[in-house]
Amino acid sequence: MNSQSMNSRLLKVDMHVHTHPFSPCSTTTPHEAIEAAINAGIDVLVFTDHDTIWSGQEIDELQQWAGGQLRLLAGIEVSCLEGHFLVYGLDKVDGLRYNMPVKELIGIARRREAAVIAAHPFRFSMECGNNCYQLDIDAVEVDSSNTSQTAQALAVKLATQRNLPRIYASDAHCPRDVGSYHTLLSGPIDTIADLVREIKNAKRG
View 1 (spheres, rainbow, N blue to C red):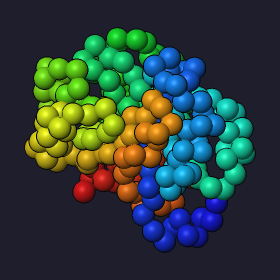
View 2: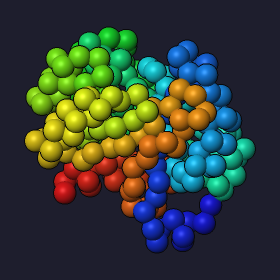
View 3: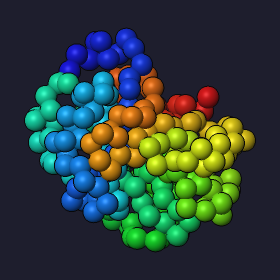
View 4: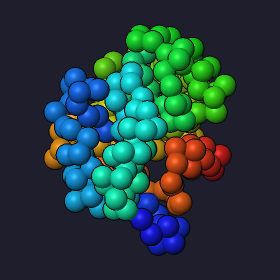
């Protein structure tokens, strides 16, 4: 990857992608996701499998396979009692559990200096989305391949009223959706810490 060219322009980041078998709901293998992202012109691809974090070694091996055509990172989508939340900056699942209270998740994220994004906040219920008005989150995913027009409008309203960054991501579960939505971020983004920095910088204004 040419880091100089990445530093001179905004990067296309798809930060919400599911792969099989870590996400049973996905039909996309990691290699298929990488190929689809490259074809879509994505610069940074983030695997966010359900309640699972890829190890650094696994990501390094896939990065070697991908070569310099994009940067590959790992986050996680945590299933909480109050909805689903994307977290970036954790390297292990210690303390996380299925259907945990979201405030407990946010507490863990804050202690580890991770970023938390509300994933498709109004997809499942108005209650889940409205609860995000009271949460210490860093951004709102406002549109994806799995977001209806109604849910998208409500998510935009949430982000606007909370003055939080808007995130666009594919939430891909099949190869054709990878890269269909992306967020433009400043580079360089070579590590998950870089991604966390850009999310938090956007939150600060």
